[in-house]
Image (cartoon, rainbow, N blue to C red):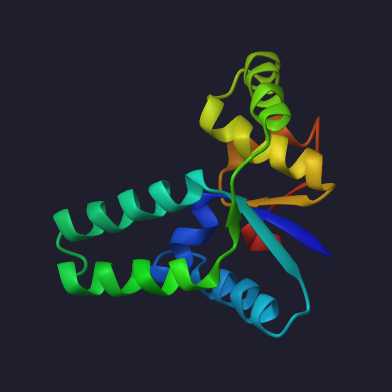
Length: 139
């Protein structure tokens, strides 16, 4: 089974948040080769921003953020989107009334014939009309 992970899931690999136990299970299944995961390269920037925010809010230290990002980068789960996927994302964002950022995850899920895995309730509601979408809590 193949999943497209959005930043709301990827950040939970690294930060102790609600549903981090579910994200850990996704990571464990991926590392065991039981599932395949992919994400657009955008996820690296979104995860980095989540780590920055965690440092600014005093949840983790700067060194922990750098270490967590390094760990995530070593997973190599992201890829650059093809031009056709980037163009598809603009149509999806307008038709679904979501940000282009969220539509990029949808476009990748559609292209890869994968399940969009997210912890974003609104994204699930809007994406499920176009692609299969699952909430992290239901993984």
